[in-house]
Length: 235
Image (cartoon, rainbow, N blue to C red):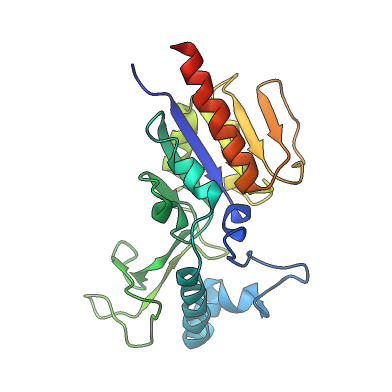
């Protein structure tokens, strides 16, 4: 029997429960830095050392945290479903929990890419990327992160996943950061959509949508049990 396709869109709320600091806090700063100073092409052109230092700290922090129950619950669906994770997070916690098909919309913290040829991408060993770390063509390596003002190259395959989904799960994202926030709208009519968040997102809910008002770790465990038991009842 062919496995149903489950697509999971995950956001910062999933990583936050592992202790990863969320993208920005209430005062609009990110680790006391303005977004414009560390996460834009202009910031890179202005002060590469500051940008590299900022992401080195993010990388160092990411190595100190562990996947949580939400990451594991998503991975534990794989024996039962064809699971594709589309994540807005740049950490590797989904992979470390065992998910095997993960698409990173906003880039990957543990990868670097050439400033000259973006298709040249390299794994970062450890947590440091420094001035003088060059690609094979001799240009400085930068974080493989989609910065503000840059296109989201993985959006096209993410839309394909959404179009093929038999079940679509949104977890830990407020559905306000576009283009990712609009991904669920590419699902086929009547595809079941489950939204897990402590706060109800500001969208129009339809009959095919189920809202689970829980934090990621609790809500995903609950949904995992529901989806697996639903399969067992069909047998």
